[in-house]
Image (tube, rainbow, N blue to C red; front, side):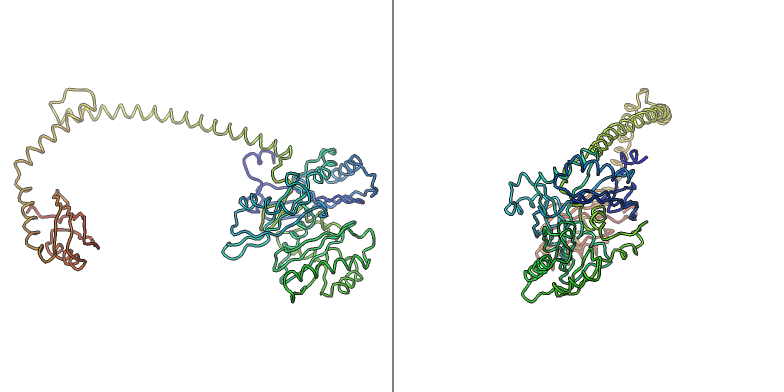
Length: 496
């Protein structure tokens, strides 16, 4: 049923999912693979499953070993629509950019040139994309966060999934996914707000100012080496305060949000080293909204896979693979192409049959009508002898015209009317006072057309007034200019 709907309907329109879509958000770390399954239906979002598969964490771990673990994860998941992979941000190059327009296609064309100078590898080896972080009032300025990742890291990340027979539709990165999750809270943080996510082997740090993602950094230190290490917290503190100082010398952190503060001790460490209010990301408040539901609790360790499964809010979906089609998408595109050819052909065939039937019916009615018209013409014009309708109509028109000419030549009404019009105009219009120069006058049965000019704008008003005083015309238009070309509709003259 879904495959049939996909042929004729778009998956979603303005964040409303016409076709129920099951998205798997997945992260691969040295010691574990985590996946969160989210159902998108209409405007609602429901967390259905959270699964994980442990890994040994060794450096000798091969793509084949990872592929077996990926298979195990998807056996637990069952059916799904698409997969989003979130990669570590350590190898990602970020850059904040501003544009004087909001068209995402134009921005996408310019971003590669803007970020090229920052890349530690040739631009042709990069996959890149961007998210819109802020649009100023009136949409005069658009702020984006662009990100680029070398192709070899994408290839390496996708290899286990390809070996497991799993197609990945979208590849995002941890910091972008975390920012998207923050945007789903009831109110985006105001002021300068930092966020921290301490993962197994990396720590993601970001700064948000008035809801806009301004700075990001990923440390190659994580919880596997001890979450309470002073050197880790010193690096986190240095990073956040450096970000804040870039804003202004007197800028300060309003607060810091931790995505995985598993204990009070961690919150105390945060406050001690960063010297700012710290709070845990409110996972539970996400599901107080009517459009978000969950069948099971979201643990802090599942934050990244959950964030990866969510579509972006207020921005296009970020992906390092924006131009690549999965096999499923290629198959869907093929079906849509075939349907696109077949449906018009079927519609045209039905239309042609209906048209043929209607034409046949109309032809019969036209033939019957022609016979009736010919009979009526011959009854009224005894001189007609032809059976061709067009010739009969032309002959009847010639005879009517001939009769009209005879009547017109015998009637004095036309001559009297024209003389009456000329008399009234010459009597009521003061040509010398107006400075009236009449270039052209045409008198027809119902209209008098005048073309010429008067001396001044004051004379224009006088001319209009004098025309009305003749009582010849049913309406006198507002001329507005000293040069005029007007048509004056005549009053019925009562036979005068």
